[in-house]
Structure formats: C-alpha cells, structure tokens
Image (cartoon, rainbow, N blue to C red; front, side, top):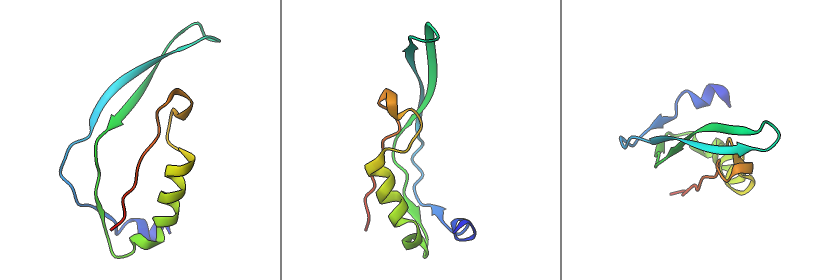
Length: 79
C-alpha cells in the first residue's frame, strides 16, 4: 500500500490555512501550542480505492493529531 501511495496526486491548488491553537494543560500548568490546518485537499489517482477504507475509518475514529482537544477531525467525500 505504501508503494501505491506514491502514485496518488493532490488535485487541488487551494492552500491550507495554518494556525496555532493553544490549549491549557492542567498537569503541566502551561499552555500547549498545537499546529492546526484547516481547508480542503482533493486527491486523484487510479488506485485510490485501496485507501478508501482507511479514509472512511479515520473520519469515524477521529485519528488526527489533537483529537482530545477537539482537533484532528476530517470529513471525506467520495466520488
């Protein structure tokens, strides 16, 4: 599957928005910065079907970074 990933291309030219989200850590008693990206990415490739189950599962499980702070979610649309 890693070999197939090399043939997947990004088909959109919209830039992602990057900002720093700060959350407070009670155990460390300080603010912790998280790099957050928002926006849209469109992927194109003949073998994308190999990745669809993982993308679908990831949006249900919220597997991105910072999910406990409300980050890390994504929505996937399949055509």
